[in-house]
Image (tube, rainbow, N blue to C red; front, side, top):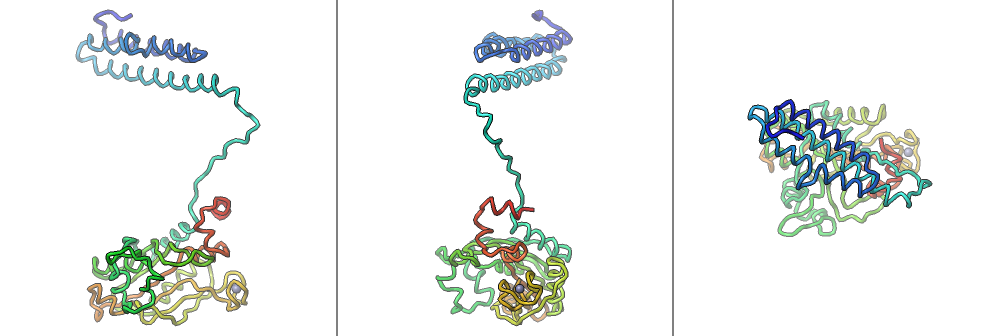
Length: 347
Ligand SMILES: [Zn+2]
């Protein structure tokens, strides 16, 4: 026992002794009853030894209390931890042991990995980052103006139909593409602008082998003085070479409301090397993205002087790119969260 007026040295020695005795008593307790008896002796909230140690703090000279308090806290932590650990062991031994089935297979330890679509997005972003692009994000719930109006969709464009777009009411909708981020960025920052906008887009598509109602999209935008179609072609060709390895590319004329001229970009079919197969429908090419020079109306709608500035933009579906890379026949594999599939393609 401690004297009524202990010195700091006496207090520290006593705390160490108490901790050792308590820990030994807990560890030695063979069952829950024995452990409870030891708990009352050391951690009891009426006359437990730890409680007495705490009260003795008050009898110490004021300048010793800091060191003594630390010793008390250490004793408390050590004793409660030892007690709790022993409690788990004792309980497990008394209640669970008879039911232990040692022939059960061990529980598998799941190790997280990136989803193939995330891997593709990260890689695309990485390549464009090296070219000076930064990532921009925007809301998934948009107004009709940001999603269509500002992007030069005429009011009678079929995409505005209820059959294609998920409307939320009161002029709001779920964005059908990540392009509204372009408009928001142009409104907010003055050119030169180089951004990538990865995100989720939504359409009223049936969930089939090549469509998903919610899908990843990644968009790129570059606006500056003197930007031409040559910049678009050179940058996107560089991207394709970096992403797919040495491959042939081609641009085909296309049409989008927000770009003029517009082009789709193909890479040589990954499976047949251009000879023609069922995956590329005999053409030898696979489409990977849509692109074009930003329509002057889009620049003007966002408040950018289209006489002074020009720009180019592209959009692609990372899931589609992942299908090409992993040779997948069905986009649903990427959105079904089936661990058996994901484990095969996880990197
Ligand atoms: Zn092919």
